Length: 176
Image 1 (cartoon, one colour):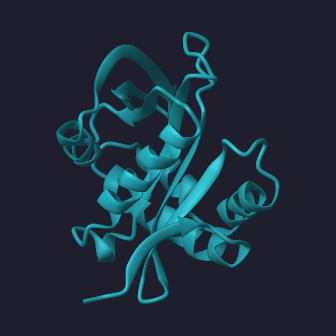
Image 2 (cartoon, rainbow, N blue to C red; image 1 turned 180 degrees about the vertical axis):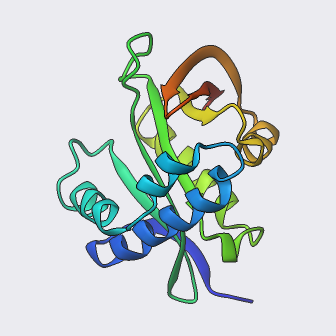
């Protein structure tokens, strides 16, 4: 069995996190995201590497975290969370799962589930009561991952202008 786990990301992980983000976005978003914006977002991992490096070295608070899933010493996925920033939520009680992604070549090996479990445990440690995340309405893969874990739409919606409107829904779960 592979040596697997989840831990806080380090600066040396940020290149792998950025690469996984680009690969995961290309795989997951290609069926519904307009081609040009997706190409721009995934043209290079370099800008994402810089953002993840900042998230590791200068998080806005201890309640902002970047975790990585590892197997045999290799980063296989990541998740980031923070206090919720939507105006109808309480940053003291509500957290936002900003992103969760697994290297498509390592999908279905349990890395996403391990990340989700670690995120939930840490959110409880930080006294959050609810978690939310924004999901593209057409991202059936992410919804199929979240719904069996107790996540459901909470009624909030937003539309991104990406050459054409792309709808998102906010999903939530209780951490109790």
